[in-house]
Image (cartoon, rainbow, N blue to C red; front, top):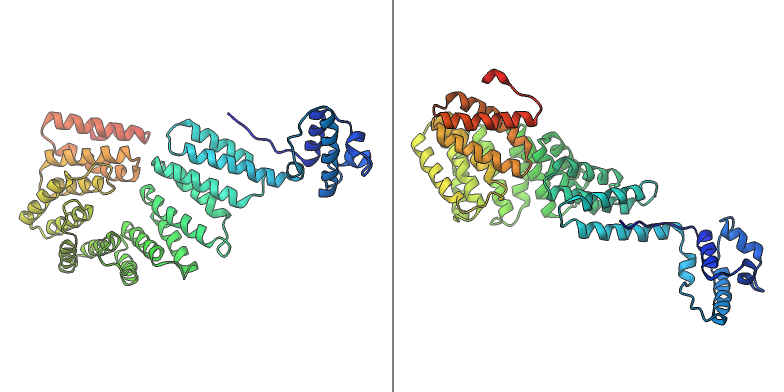
Length: 408
């Protein structure tokens, strides 16, 4: 693998002489002394532009007589260590960008090489760029832990006043990557920090931070706080037909449902459905999923089943890569399991949700599903269903390094 070297000005001059086989006296000529060249080569005296020009002129005269072309110029001689370091880091960054589109060890080894090169250099903004690149790479490969680690390293180098735009961007990324890690307090911390320190951020970013903050509170079951943030986001957002606005509205209705304010929640959902009205829009699934949950809470199982069948019909339009599909199967599984007692269908939905989350490395949700699978296992009557669920539970427990043999 290609490596790069930083060379001092004195060392470059020494190598230049050796390359063209020229002694110090000949390079000095009549205008500068051999002693000056010696001191420059030992990095005891700084090379001036005038001295560099004289030496290059003398070198070219000597080489012309030998019919040798001199490739180096004054910029090469004058380029100091920091300027060389910046150029080298830029090469590393270009290589990382090219490698980031591929999975495998090449990106990782180049990243390690880049970090080692940067370790002792005072190149803050280059380090920030590299850390952001690494965070993006790991995020795209669903390695949320490493992604968060590199975004945090980038943030640690930033200053609120000097690096406003870069700071907002990395805080946004952190508020996204903490969710699959289940680090909901950290979501709130970074979003609140952004909202407090960047009062004049764009409408887009303001809404993103308010929404993500609400998600953090929602996952911590602080529903009133979540609604407060969502109300603020709704006031800021001007495009009432956009997907993000629909997300805000749906999360608000979801919180209302958790607070058992069911009539208010259903009104919000029904209004939202009229706005979406598209079976190929994932928001339709999200809205119907929450409506199903409300009917289930109200013990209106006829309406619950009707909405659920509609959800399963619409889910056929989406691939498992769609962000909310795994969550939809998990939520439907819980209703089938806990309320409707349709255990075989519940098993299918749980297993599908687990498989989706495993592919995406979203381990928080897998940990949420596991106790439900254990409970379902004790209720299944079909031996094949029991065997399949038992094998999946054992597999999940082994991944965490422990097996709860009591349930067997």
